[in-house]
Image 1 (tube, rainbow, N blue to C red):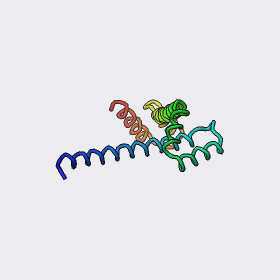
Image 2: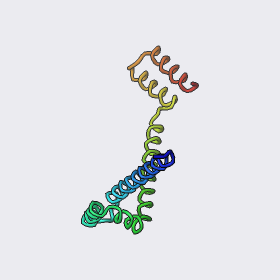
Image 3: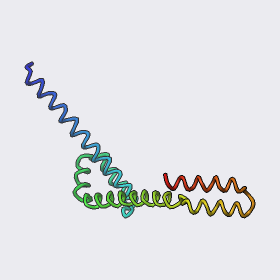
Image 4: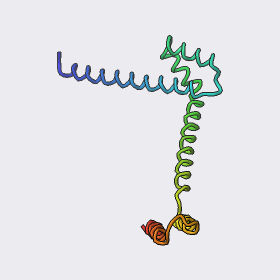
Length: 134
């Protein structure tokens, strides 16, 4: 066995593994898209899955050709929805933070109600003002 045939075997193995992994990624994307699609009824999903089990390569190719555009649109919609949820969460957390003015007003109400002393009010006021300048 020569050096070049050994190198060719290694390259062939890398290419084979690459194609197999790419095929698995496509297959998982197709299965994910099947369950993500709300317009497709359960019977149609079951038929696609059966064909994916018994004729995997041909079915994956047909699925990508027939439903590839919708597959991309559904993925983009899901990504946009996830981005929107993340932005809403950040806004809700950022909006709930009390400003120093709010903290001082709350402390003043506690002082007027007699729940805290003048020294505690001064301490709370100083803490709120120090967070505002930090």
